Image (cartoon, rainbow, N blue to C red):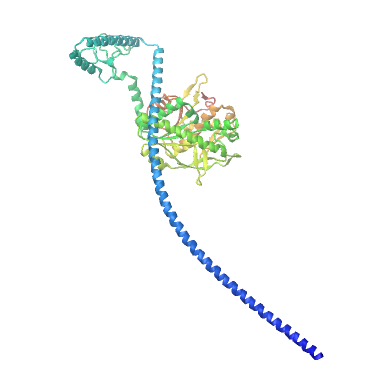
Length: 572
């Protein structure tokens, strides 16, 4: 029994060892089977992945081919639609051009009718001289006689037999000449007409055609005739000829303020005069401002000009992002208005040119000046003069707006007067013209009891006046600065400050090489009288020291600034 127990223990022990060994082998076999299964599963996944990748690649190729085919079809369809749209736009453009021409013709006709009515009213109200009275009596009597003659001719034509009607019509046509009015037909028989000398004593002295100045001293029996030199137009043209020749092929820069665009009558007359200077051969650059339009927009939004204009008394605005957006919109509006009206004026005069605008200005920010951050306000640094000269070579007019662009493409607000001075200097222009809706003039004299208007001054005189009022203009940025002076901006009204600021930018332009700067009114014909007459200008002219005038009477020696003379010089 003890041996059996011992054998049983040994058998159990051996069985446990064998069981452990078998369990270990089974675990190892299971592990190997698991690894084999994982390997096979990985191979199946890899095979499936490779199959899916090949399928995806095939599908991508198919999709790409379909997309390319669809793209070609869409491209062809888009081209067809673009062609159709271009055709419609062309037709619409032609229709708009025709409508524009019709409207412009109607406006011109209305303006002419209005002008004729004004001239007729002025002529009716004017006190005529004895010569004019006799001329009117003669014309009235002649008109009555012509009316009676026409009535008699019509009556005689009615009494004529049918065979003689053609002869009467032929004589009537011959008497009409180039006139369309039938009342201008010759009252006398063609065979009775004769050609005689223009100056003969037997001519009717009451006739306005041969009636000369009644104040002229003529002896009895002398011939009476009207010479061409007795017309005022001849002397005016002769006096203006030196200026027309001198300004031909020269470059001139005009500055148009925003308030001028708001006045339709003045705006039309100024554009008409600018178009006429183009016909005289001048190369034109126009800098347009829009300060008034921006102020009006800001007042509508904020009830006042806004905090963005806290430094506007210096002539330069603090431009916030909101004001910059308004500036972009109003600059586009002003540019369109100038292009529209100037194109119409040029076309009415038979000119074949375009008004071109674009990004010609590179600018930099002003930054912080005297503790004020001007944000999006800048100053011009470079001008693409080559492009402007190319446009001028094609007889085009260049238009600039008060917007400049940095090298990074950011938009900046540039003061339009400073932009005009910079542009004139960069182009080496002969003249810079500032238009002003409320201009000031200079009055002064060494005699306290008498004052006279001063039209022409030199640069050195202008600098003395500006120094007296404490105004300085930065030579690089064109930034105006009022000094602390008893005669500073605190004692000047708005128009006087504007006049001094324009004088400051005028000296800034002259320092850059401009010969003359004019500050003139926006009245009808003011530009022409300022540029093409001697001593009859409407504004103030500032020239380089020692400038040689084209006309002997047009000198700039009106003013020699002395102590005490510059005080109280500006008057409206």
